[in-house]
Image 1 (cartoon, one colour):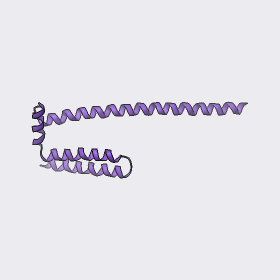
Image 2 (cartoon, rainbow, N blue to C red):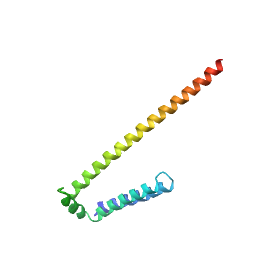
Image 3 (cartoon, helix red, strand yellow):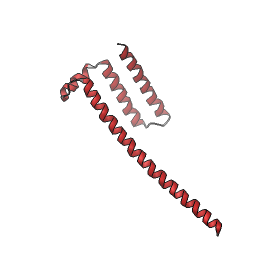
Image 4 (cartoon, rainbow, N blue to C red):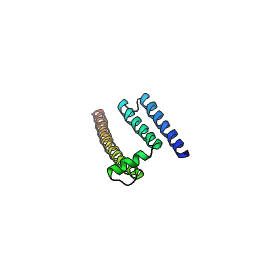
Length: 114
């Protein structure tokens, strides 16, 4: 029972943090709603873990915990891939910006010599 209380506290904090970041503009409204749905779904699973077992059996997975683990791993892999793509895009943009700035600086120094 203690683990349930601790998990609910963590999930409530995650929900509060999501909306605080949304108010600050760091998270879009659609994202805040999506993350809120995740936190509420997780709290529902904590309250009624037998639901995941029923869903797991329906999907052909042995236990609810296995289903949650599989879903979490797949979700994390997707998020890591999205972060990788975003990081690569930022690197290209930064390279282009530095290249443009270097050429402009070089052009200004070249015109000073003339």
